[in-house]
Structures are given as C-alpha cells and as structure tokens.
Length: 200
Ligand SMILES: [Zn+2]
Image 1: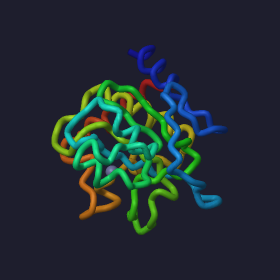
Image 2: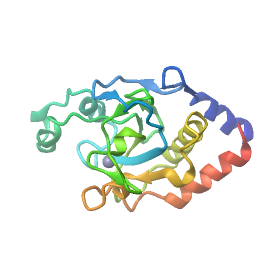
Image 3: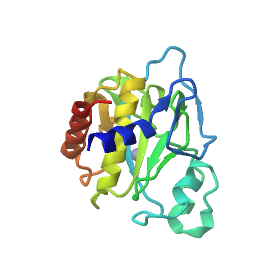
Image 4: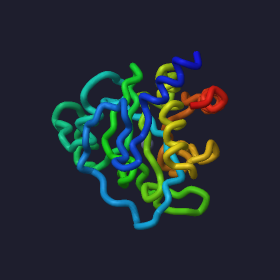
C-alpha cells in the first residue's frame, strides 16, 4: 500500500520551475496568461465536465480547451465552442491525467467568482476538472488521482491546505453547480488524510 501510493504520488510530482506535472499527458492550451505579479497560489477549484453532457471518453474536452471544438457536431457544442476556457488539469474517467496549463500560469476555469471575499479566483487558484456530471458518481480511480495531485500541489504550493480545496459551485454559487452532489467530499478528504499519514 505504502509503496503503491508513494510511487503514484511521485509519478504526479510537480516541477516548480516549469509548473509541469510529471506523469500527466501534456495537451497545451492557448487559453491562459500570467497570474498577477506576486500573487500566491493558495486555492484549488474542483470542476466536473463532460462533452457532450453525460457522455464520456471522447476527444471533446481537449478540443474545447484547445479551441478546436466543432460547433456543428452537436447542439451543445454550438453553445460552448466560442468560449475561451481551460483548466490546469483534467482527470478522465479511467484515471488518466491531462495537463493543459502549467500550474504557474493562470488558466481560465472559474469565471466570475470569489472565495472568502477575494474575487477573480483564476488569479490565485489551480483548476482541476474531473470528467463527469453533477449526478453520476465519479470513479474511484478519479478520487485516487485527484488526491495524488492535491498531495503534490500542497507540497509545491503550501498555501493549498485541505480547507482551500473547493468546488466550482462554492466560488460561483447560483451560477455553477459542478462538481455536483455526486462529488464525494468526505471520501476525498479521507483519501487525503490517508496519503498524508503514509507520507511521501
Ligand atoms: Zn466548473
């Protein structure tokens, strides 16, 4: 157990110089820019996404984040194809981790948002998408990969404490509902505690 989780966490370690997550497949998005100078990164925003909604496994999330979603392929695509959005990371249903934006840069995932009185969460947060919907249970492997990512992030960005891992619905209430009621927050926190007890 220790060897397994330790090795997995190491696979997902973060290079502080580049903001790249070792072990993540790189799929660079142009939808990012510099964070404000001196802005500490001290929040993680967890999202849920599927394209089309409720369908999994296709190439469309990556297409959306790289501005190549075919608007005429699905009625929903026509609504979102013009958006310029991204997240730092995506955890797919099978546990694959995809990185779109280096963690040191600002990804465009939260939109109009605030947390504890601070607006513009994109400035100071890392955005992680889980492939899923608000109502269908996320996969156990997704929680494991998310917990491993969060453990690595808390090392690279010590301001990201367990209390500063929130949902998109928490920073944009009334506007966003993801990751939804299906997301098991107690289960995630239990995994994080377990990883911390097991150590690096
Ligand atoms: Zn979201």
